[in-house]
Length: 320
Image (cartoon, rainbow, N blue to C red; front, side, top):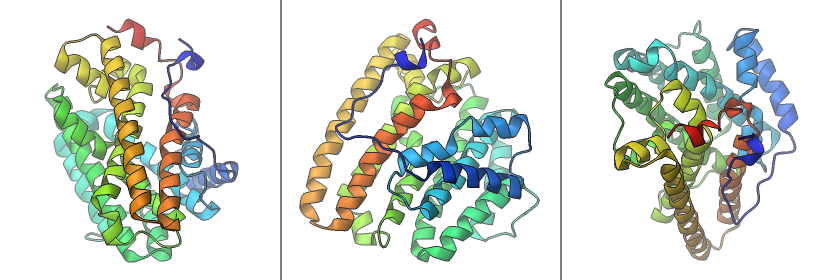
């Protein structure tokens, strides 16, 4: 099955890519080299193959170059973090993950002195400080709190791998929202506005549903496009694998079920979006909802282009 033959998901809104993406990619590579986040050679080539700047550009097509650059740099650092947590001995060592979480979270929140000899610390602290220096402090705290969930979800995954445990569906659906770090990108959407959303808006149940649906859609479609990669590696943290094992169905049936769940969430999103735009006849909210549309549609466009998952989708039809 070639990349072009992979099934896609339908959205009632278009995807578009940021016009500044090539500039952002070049500057992020310079940033990686300046902070020595990935050594030259295979490690840097592997990171480039993730198309991190393209992902940022598809997720935030209307961002100015400053916000796009922040998102591109953060995305590159996040891919490095993902690989550190998901691969090698760390992936099945919850005690080591917990120690690393304490280190990174302590550094980000300022509880401990940052170890600037650690490349990932250098990258994450740089992203944090750029948010801190250019946006309200309440926004930084909101972003950091959502980033904390990502670290804790990595601990949950490592514990499951150590015990060779496939999580139940409900638990996986809940924890997948945290392991994908999508809430941090929902926060970044607010940087497209003149000012981040006030608490009474961002915590409103309708906006929370918007963020939850965006999270589910991005994570579930990622599970679909990364399935081949995860079947090869033996990774169980994938909604299709979880559905297959919990319901004792074939992989193809699990794919069909995921697509049905996805379409139901999109229908729910359309309904909630209409209610949001009726409740707030406000340009900022309309801009935020337009950005949420672009986030959802853009994620799939990046996945279809990304070499990170290239050449692996044929396993969907054969793994059983």
